[in-house]
Amino acid sequence: MKEIKSFLTIILILVSSFLIFSCEEDGNNAKEPLLGFYTISKSTLTAPCASQNGAATLPSGTDVTAAILNAFLSDIECASAGDKAIEIAENGKIYFACRVEGKKQDQGSWAINSDRSELTLTLLIEGNLIPLKLTGLQESTIKVSGNVASLPVPPLLLASVESLFSGVDDQAILISIDIELEKLG
Image 1: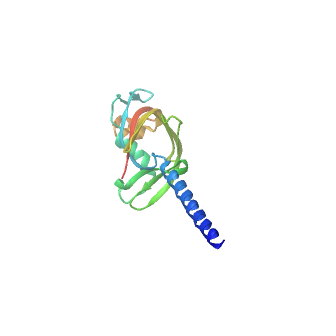
Image 2: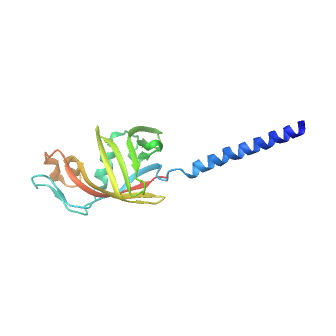
């Protein structure tokens, strides 16, 4: 009788262990592929933009990558500018991070639709919640890209691309961009 109880106990332990490890493996396999650290590697105007009075303009196709990257990551202080990153984290959280320093700050939230064609990033930029909806979403293991339409940006953001925007007093300029986020290793 003792041998049967011992045998059943051993079987129960083995079955429990198998179930626990199987569940852990399933959880790991279901991990969201978007999770990770990113930088903005490309941002190009998909439509012309202009100040209200038309004094400052930029044509479609203009590269605004540096301006967008600087504006997005200006809210976090890192010892090295190259250390700055956007983290798409679990539980729908977004952080701006200094990867080497291990520093990060809560910067908003993210959500993806069920057919994975739209990624919405709601970011806290310079004290304002800015929703960015990337449509036509393209995903790979190394990058995420899409189009953001009608993004309101301060004219000073565009002044680094076209100096005439530095004298514009519009509250915001609407831009539409193709944006690419490159995953950092």
